Length: 105
Image (cartoon, rainbow, N blue to C red; front, top):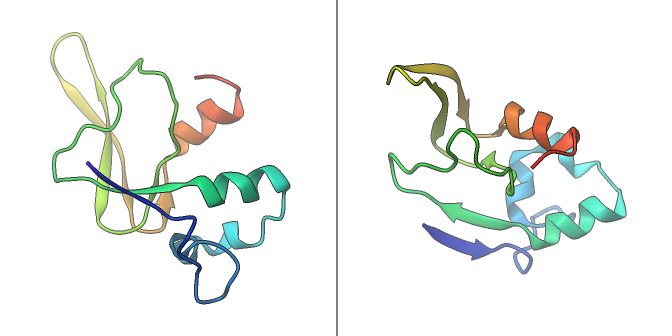
């Protein structure tokens, strides 16, 4: 996994890091905590097939897809797997959002 510090790269609009341009709704958020998190965010380039989280792992990162796509699956004890949803560029993981907003990890 390749990660890049985004705090130094300003967007063309000058309102934050370049990755923020993929998420117009987030550009309007002026909360001081969000602004600090936004500046500390890292961009990760993940190879195809890279497993980001496993079911039951602590939720320690927030995933925003800048380019490409990823899928979210549910694994079952039987060994079967169910596709929950697919994320494309400009989208965020709704399960991660739910867990973090509920205060879970």
